[in-house]
Image 1 (tube, rainbow, N blue to C red):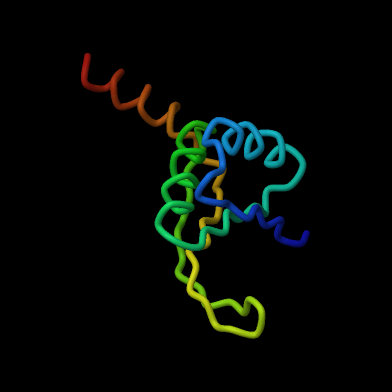
Image 2 (spheres, rainbow, N blue to C red):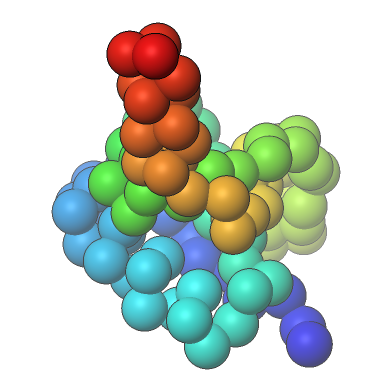
Length: 94
């Protein structure tokens, strides 16, 4: 299946990004958040945290209007952060 790329802007709402990640990941597990600039990277990371999923960041160089631009692509992965925290908390109580 082909990668689905979400282009994140610095003025994107983190809550909406998180909801979109959850909805899309059910249909397509090949999901990438593309962030250009520090503001969009921050919004993308907050959205990822809200969704409860984890991600692997990668720095890429892409072409925009015939210019080379660096971006951060975050591949969303299935591991749920919330589930990992529950396990850690449970082990500490033992």
